[in-house]
Image (cartoon, rainbow, N blue to C red; front, side):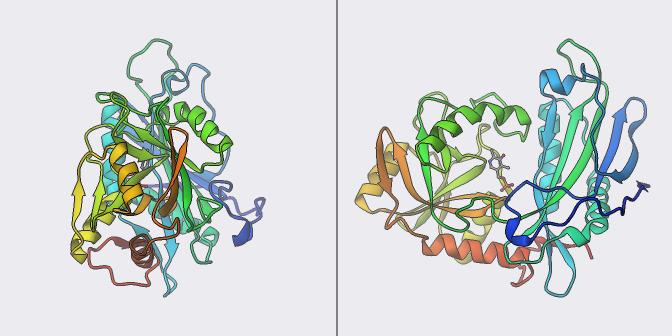
Length: 355
Ligand SMILES: *Cc1c(COP(=O)(O)O)cnc(C)c1O
């Protein structure tokens, strides 16, 4: 694939200090774009100066939410190279999300080339301090201008990138999680397992309520019985219970996280029993009280591993063990970030070198 590059080196955007980064606040000078229609398929791959999109007000993404996206990161490696972490998993998942939303898929080599060329062009934007990286946000939207619910005939795929620091202001510190039994995120048969924007807007109300009570995130229960744990915010959830690692199974309502999969593979590699099974919220509360629950942590690209220190459920708060960062959470965090940043061996071949 030929990518046409139009550079903007006017330096209009100042680079933020690493300490100011936060998450998702900054974008770089350029973006990747390509269009889809029939009979052309994907065409007109280009990198342009970062800027506004022009969309017809009837563009179907704005009315019917035909949109899918991904999130991954690029890291500086100790030898001056640049690495990605398991990008083929994100590509696979974006294509799975696209199939669910009746959108066109993108070949892995084409997708990777787009990520690679954009990241290399923007390499000066990749921050260097510990825990920072360049966040990559591939996005696909339906652009056909037509009112009426049907799959669009034309699409835009674009990639924007931006330097990021810690996802939570807490950093690698325990969060307080609010268990929502009023609101739900996804029901069986819905689109919970697709990374599509329609899954996120509806969570804001519960998120705001939780924040007002001093919690960092919402823990979602299953839509039918409001009993089985699903995920935390935009992360998967793990429990270290009776010396076993437990996480809810992927049955259509949970996003299949790349970090989740990495934790499962690592634990098996280390000889820690890892089980995918339904987890009843009452079991979480009981095991918290009895001390069987030793650790609880969320997993996702943004925060990697986010230890949970306390959960609020039906008006009471329950501390997880001593409320601090557990040994297992720390071990996964150190290992996964060690592989990502090139400080540790990579027995599974998860690191992909771009340069
Ligand atoms: C992206 C996301 C995750 C985490 O997936 P990773 O691949 O580990 O980043 C978990 N849950 C939801 C709802 C998500 O959107």
